[in-house]
Image (cartoon, rainbow, N blue to C red; front, side):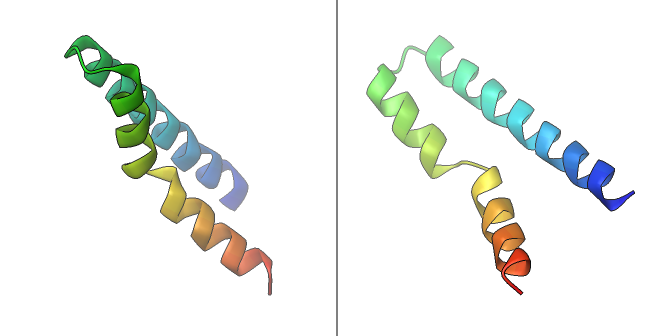
Length: 57
């Protein structure tokens, strides 16, 4: 059950990241700026950090 919920969180996070990228591209920003902003505001980075921290135990 926990694995399915985590998969749902990851799916929502990836969808938000794709939508954010699409909106930035549509606003006319250069690709380099878009990539930098997407990496900086990546919603899955804190999630990955938390998961790896717990998996090390």
